[in-house]
Image 1 (cartoon, one colour):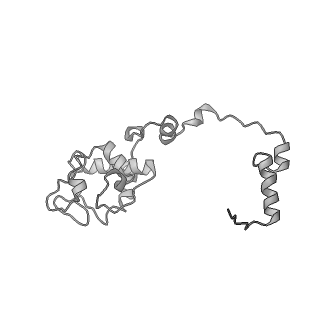
Image 2 (spheres, rainbow, N blue to C red; image 1 turned 45 degrees about the vertical axis):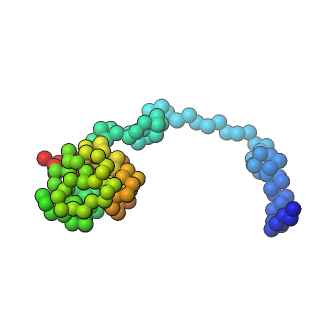
Image 3 (cartoon, rainbow, N blue to C red; image 1 turned 180 degrees about the vertical axis):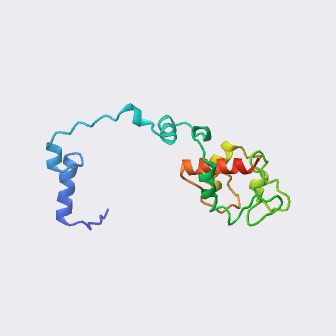
Length: 166
């Protein structure tokens, strides 16, 4: 069996030294490890996202206080494709009374089969999850939007959608 020896002798010697001491340089291996400071318990779950990550729980929209005014600013990215006017579809369907509405139900809009057949009702929690990554939430959707990754901005956006749905 032939081996490809692209490494020089110096590189091989360095590898041998590193592997002999568990991947650390000799100086690091000989030095005692510094004790790690324990993080204060109150900072371990300082945000809802951190708390959900710590427990492996699903992040809940109810964990946030959504600000509709801030959500209107987040919605600016959505205006290219969506409006709130009843019966006015653009690239995306009208968002008139989106909260509480069934997915794929706006007359005159050509939904993807994935969206029409999803069985989704747009609740604040569902919108919160969907708007993080629409293509992952409804595989096959035509919505070409990467999502709002920031949890607080997404909660603000949902609060704005709720306010517009009244």
